[in-house]
Image: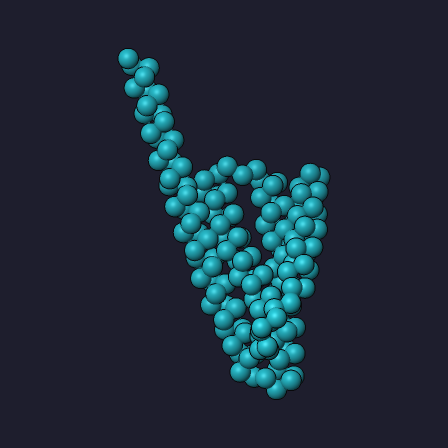
Length: 145
């Protein structure tokens, strides 16, 4: 039951944050590609890859909390359906270049962000493991003396 509470709380927070970010007006931006949704999805791809890699490879995150962050928060924060709706709207308006650009850039940046999320989590994990090894070696050395 607890995992459902984590998912629900995460989903609430993720949906609210997405709503707030989508509402930000970019004063000097006058193109058709929806940058707010693009930013949300790229950030979500990075965060999902980082959290899952850190949780599964470093193993310091409770499984229920991981569900709340990934399925709940990031599932509600990112918005593939909005990307599709906005792309269809661009196509209906005859803005084919913007539609293709939007999907292409969203996919490329999303994959790149996920890749960097994995790399960063692994780097962090390696540094933490190195610190633990040094601390264990220092403790073992002090026990010998």
